[in-house]
Image 1 (spheres, rainbow over the protein chains, first blue to last red):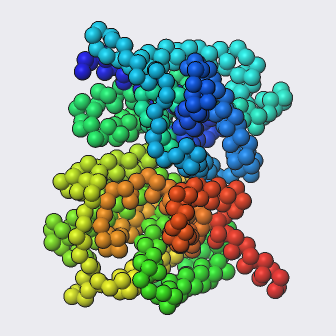
Image 2 (image 1 turned 180 degrees about the horizontal axis):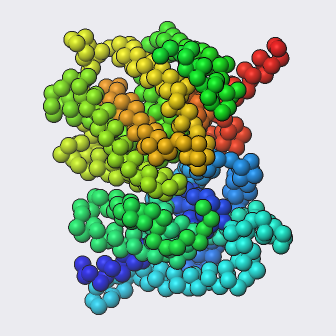
Image 3 (image 1 turned 180 degrees about the vertical axis):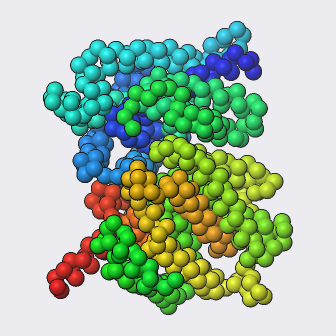
Length: 290
Length: 336
């Protein structure tokens, strides 16, 4: 395969990792919490999109994307309210919170297995099989969608966090909950919003990733690599999450050439561990509380 | 050293003597005696399947004890612990089959391999807090991929079969009851050692580390050293537990050591109760025995595990051991 095409596909998959990594970073910044269920929320998002396609066979891709994002946002908010808020208010230990996210991930993935079955499904959309020719090499069309949507989303998030009241309130609550409270910003409400937005972005990643791969209850494992991406780019940093995702995506496609392909899943962690040993808090300046 | 001398030093030097003082020691040894008596009585309950389950429970209980020290006491969360059980298991089988060694030296090699791997992983503690957790996760994934893909050594996904029964000094532990007794002996030794450890100076340092690392450093605990020690110890014990595993299952294959198994181990110590040695064993019993007796619900097993974990963390943060302890205290309180 042509190297340029490989780089392009590496970048596209890297964008998916980056999108899931964004969710990790947002929740970490808001609550100082690593949400290990993020990958499973992406999986649920992909299945929500699948269901939307089945119910509305003629719906445009964008509408399906929005439905999945809204559904996931609701799920994220519910998870925050029911599971995390009581634990955070009890000032539970970090270990309890991490284990809680692991438990939620297990419930989501195995719940999805009961709801949608154990067999992987393929998105019933023309996009799944659409191939375009780039310099006489075939490239799945969905890669271009991903590469186009990513910058749009980044600009939207940037504007949201700098220009809107809600975005500014969330940043305030994340950086200094006590001061934010005196301005009437509840850090608990900000955490709910962070979960909702992170889940919506996760669902976006899931729906975009679905045409590239199969959708199955265990695809949340992608979240693991996304996590490595978030760590490389420093947890809590939004540009860092994206850059980390691209590094992992490129590293995987290029690394698979030199290493045996069976070890492809290890590459993300080898990159991560190598970078952490040199820069123990990741490549970007941290915007997060510790 | 006898237990009484450690007791006095604890009560005079520990900052929270009331919590870890005289009473707690006696209670911990009582719990130890009760649990071991329970395991010793298990063969009376039934043969075949019960014993087989008992064998599985014991090696998980040993591994969970190690993880409890590392996570529950010292606060060093590992998300790849199953990998170390795997290193112990593969190390033992490979030493037996390739080098023709008998169980004792092979088991030593397996445990040593896991210890060394743990020592390598412990180098990652330069990474603070959450970054270390992720590194343990990555470590587990990498070890699992090596097990799956180094076909020449590990047999790949098919794993290794043809495992011979354990033989020590000419005595064969081929029968299930003798294998069970051997494992129980190992559990007694590990449990007793860890009980002594948690009541001693190292145990207090681990606890201080787990509760507040910065505070521990400020009162002179050499946190880096103790963190590394806790991690290496946890991994070594996991590896030791792993040496029994192939002899119970009669095969080793990579999927027994994947990341779900690491999660199951973490759920064990959480459900049983973090920072409680009996909790680790209770957790192993609950997590292994329950699903085995509900075979027809196998599809729901992981879902049930997840729900169990969430419920325990929200309603019963101290686990089963904590709940039992609470009832015990209430009973004592009424009597007084």
